[in-house]
Image (cartoon, rainbow, N blue to C red; front, side):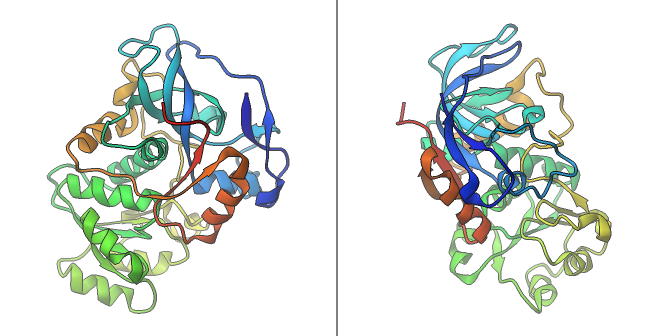
Amino acid sequence: MRAVLITRYGPADTMRVGEVEAPHAGPREIRIRVVASGLTPADTYLRAGRLRESIALRLPHVTGVDAAGVVDEVGAGVTGVAPGDAVFGLTDPARLGGAHAEHAVLVAWAAKPTAWSWDEAGGAAGNVETATRVLDRLGVGAGAGRTVLVHGAAGGVGTVAVQLAAARGATVVGTASEGNHDLLRSLGAAPTTYGPGLAERVGALAPGGVDAVLDCAGGTLPELIGIAGDAARVVTIADLDAAAHGVHLSHSAPVTEMDGAAVGDADPMAVHGLRAAAALAAEGRLRVPVAATFPLAEAAAAHELSESRHARGKIVLRAGPDA
């Protein structure tokens, strides 16, 4: 099968599409014929070697951690899903990838909402898992009445986190460039801009204070800690210097943690918030803004767009036509 490969650490143009042996579903796993798969910042970190001291890749490495497609193999012990079903989900975090290919093995999945296009579904699972995990860690539960600041709210994880927090009853403030403020309003956040004076602007929008901060942008942790009042109330998915500030770093893909649930749980549809997200999508309460879609052969261009930090929503790779 064709797959996007990291053959050596380096810039985006070192990636290539090559032929590799197709994977097969093991116990409590399914395999899909991939239609679309999402690109995360963690994919670019892995390719560039930014995580090589803590995460060793066996090269060549197939990238990608979330995908949507049509089930074509069902492993032992799996119930409730059959070949031909349309699903979206996550690859095994221990494999650190595998989704940017013509076939992928998933360990957690949910039925693809009919309200979502294939591109939306392909880019959903990683963002849903990350946002769910971080909101849970920050104590933003249903009915808790929390006020949440999502810093860098117009990106892939940010747009989903805004909607999930709002669905839990939180008041949400989101930072983004002014051109993305209408998008944030449509998702349920009160928008403001980046830059000097952020604390004052957030204070005007949330006069009662901010209970939790999800940092999707990086580079401003001291200011965000000041807004939250405590480093323990801040989680970043973007700042690799988090430990120096006493802030928890949670990778923007399921590289090292999967929201406290074991991969291969008896009901994988319930793992990582995927089933809850699908239910919200069916109600018209969760959408996945797509920044751009690229064929597998143009994965390098997709990585370059991600690294530009100007993508509005999720970047998606297409492995095949609509099913």
